Amino acid sequence: MRVLAGDIGGTKTAVAIAEVGPRSLSLLATRTYPSADFRALEQIVEDFLSGDHPPRAAAFGVAGPVTRGRAKVTKLPWTIDETLLARRFAIPRVRVLNDFAAAALGIPRLPARGSTLLVPGTAQPDGPIGVLGAGTGLGQAAIVVAGGARIVVESEGGHADFGPRDDVEDRLVRFVRRRFARVDRDRLLSGEGIGHIYDFLKADRKARDAPAVARAFESEDRAAVISRFAMSRRDRLCSDALSLFVSIYGSEAGNLALQYRTTGGVYLAGGIAGKILPALRGKVFRESFRWKPPLEAMLAKIPVRVVREPRLGLLGAAEAAYRMAIETTR
Image (cartoon, rainbow, N blue to C red):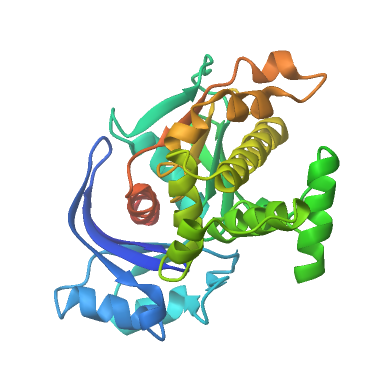
């Protein structure tokens, strides 16, 4: 069955035509668009389909909460509606779901080399799976097995309050609160968040940008600059900022593991994990993930993997479209 799949984020929107069966999923044609260049998703779909015969079903993973088939993209002025999309493009079945619900659906469809082990453990075959990802924002979801079927539990946990663990993070919260009034996890575990952590450490130490870092900030994305200088060990402030980011990331992965008792493992998706993989491999992430007294023994058994497949959201959206089409034709 051919379906239309979309992965809609605040920075970019990817769309694909996929061929899906019970045990196979192939992306036949894909294209990525800069989200901010378009007023609405409909413009992108119209360009992508270009008058081709509409597929039987479509699904779109959206970076934002979904209510009754309608979503407002958190970091874009877009509203996405299942009914309007179905009518506009003559697609019989359309589903809109949270982007990390789509990512979760894509986990079982990952190819063999689609993920890398980060923290060792032993996954239980039918245990709940957590999916967490820092990118433009922080996404979360879980997969549970009930009645032999995998069910996705959607979440907006990325917008839950951030809980500091020590004096440094107490000061970090106060610093970020002065800028934004409320400090949620998304505010720190995102590309934006790496910059906030760097700014905090600079202010906390009464330090200055290194000349090379300051020059790079003038023309490049700040998170990318900080990460690059950190991983090449060319700047202490950048290194410490990335280390604190990694520690907070590990702690939040541990929080997710506890919330859903993810004995099937935790997967890190999102755009940042793959880019900072060398930093995640160190002991900082692993120790932060497991340090949850009195439950360290439980967390020590849970593996954490980094998703390397950049099209995870498209795989999950294609799976969602396929499931919907199959269920409505039975």
